[in-house]
Structure formats: structure tokens, C-alpha cells
Image 1 (tube, rainbow, N blue to C red):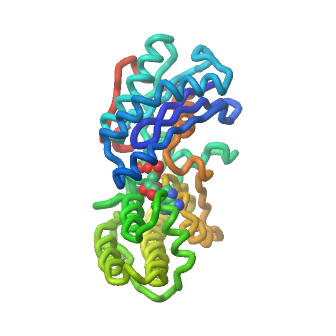
Image 2 (spheres, rainbow, N blue to C red):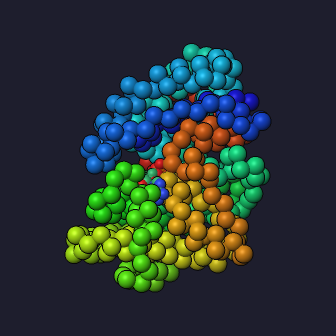
Image 3 (cartoon, protein in one colour):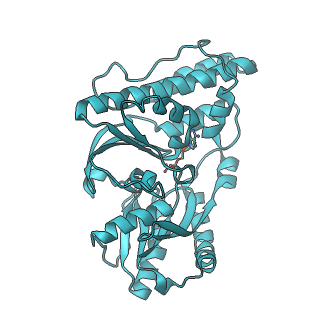
Length: 334
Ligand code: KG4
């Protein structure tokens, strides 16, 4: 069963063909909008949707050439219908729907958050087990999810303000680091000394499972401004920033384990690529089972869209042929 995946929810134009039965990636191509993001200091929705429009046909043609397949070898087309930026979503939705309409190949509308949630199971050769706790940490979302079974979710906690990825990007820019902002903090933090600063651990005294990062962001900004010409101090700040943000994340995960009685954590999203976080979570491996995606599946990609498309296709939950997008689409609205 071959699934074509199309992802255009944010700032990456991605297409992939995934062989769901034999569990392997036939071909995958991503066009990242890095140059535009660097020029503008972040994502500009209108610029991203235009970039999707320019590149989507080209990379689809390349994908089929590379995989030596024709569209008629495809069993289903899965595309990201939401959540995401409306102009960007429309590009993927329009091309997927048009292809499906022309060829009569079934169309599957995919929820981007749900696709991230299952990304650690792609190629990890691990059977999906239920129930588990999902920790989605990306540029657009920060959520703790109780996963009862396929398609049945409860949001236990989410960020009340900024996403964790966004917080990394802002602090990284203030530290004068280059793109990719998130991972460059870890490199700077390597030169940092422990115990030189003590930042607050956000929300650890509240009984809920929500997160908040804007207070920490303001606090760290003030400290950076104070020491902006001292290289060693900036490394120390990067180290303590990672410690603070990840300690609060892990604190909430432990609380969620306790509340649900679960002992399995499945981490996903761009920030799940972070090495410091992985090291910290691996320390809990004696008591809990922890699963991460392969590095190439942490940030947005079309393989995860095709993979979830395969899971949905098995269930025969197909969409009708109309252009469907939902820029705000929670997991409990599936
Ligand atoms: O999952 P993703 O591609 O975007 C959404 O679907 O929203 O994640 C992108 C985010 C960016 O904010 C980026 O800085 C962050 O993930 N990121 C990282 C790392 N790699 C990517 N943050 C911290 N450490 C990393 N190694």
C-alpha cells in the first residue's frame, strides 16, 4: 500500500511516498524556507504560502521521477488539512484534492499534530502500543496528550502563551546565534558552566499540567541584556535556559505519569531533536519507557503525513472530494 504524503502547514514544502505495508520510505523531498526565514527573522505567513506555490509542482514531479512510480501506483493521497497557516494549508489541500479528483485515488485529510504524535513509530520497527502519554513540542504547539487508542485523545495540558519552539527561537536570536536557532542554543550551552545562574522553573507550583514560557522569556531577556558583551556568561545563560525549560517540561511529564498511571512517553515535534532534552529524559528510562522520533522526523516532514495516512486508510476513514482545511484543529475534534 503506497501513500503519497503532502505537507504544507507552515514553512516547509514536503512530499513523500511511503510503502505502508512494507514499512519503508520510497522517496521523500523537502524544500525548507530557511533563506526567507533568515532574511525576515522568522516565518512570514504570506511569504511561506507563496514559496509553497512556487515549489510544490516541481518537487512532486521530482518525487515521482526519483521513485520511478506513476500517480496510478499510489493507493491513497494524504495531506495536512490543519492546524496551520491558512494560506500554506490551502496550497497542499488544493493540489492533493485536484490530484485525487483527477485520478479517483482516495483522499485523506490529516491532522498535523496527530501526524507528529505517531512520528516516533515510523521506521522504529516498534509496534504502536496503547495507552501512552504524548509530548508534542514544536514551533507551533506544546501539548501533553493522553492517548487512549488510535483516534481517541485527551489534551492534559498545553502552553498558555508561547510554544516551546518559539521560545527557543526568540532566546537564540537574543543570544546572537545563527539559524537554526533551536539547535544552536545546545551548542552554545556546551561551553556553559553549571550553577552560574538560577532561572525559575515555570509553572511547577501549579497543580495543572499546562505550560507557560513567556515569563521565562522576559526573565532571560533581561539577563542577556545585562551580560550581552560577555561570551562566557552568554554560554552560562544558554545552559541554564535549557535546564530551566526542560526541568519544567519533565516535571509536568512526571505529574502526568502520576495522574494517569501510564508509564510510556512518546515525544515528538521539532524540539524533540534537542540533545539536552534527550539526555535528561533517558535518565528516566529505568522507570518509564521513552520513545523519540528519528532526527529526520522531528521537524515537519511529509513521511509522517503519509504514515498517518496509512493508519487512517486501514480504518477506511476517507474524506470526500472537496477542498478541506481547518487552520485551528484540536485533537479532540477529529
Ligand atoms: O515541528 P516543527 O518543524 O514545527 C512545527 O510543526 O511547528 O518545529 C520547529 C521548531 C523550531 O522552533 C525550532 O527552533 C525547534 O523546533 N527546534 C529545536 C531543535 N531543533 C528544532 N529546538 C530546540 N533544540 C533543537 N535541537
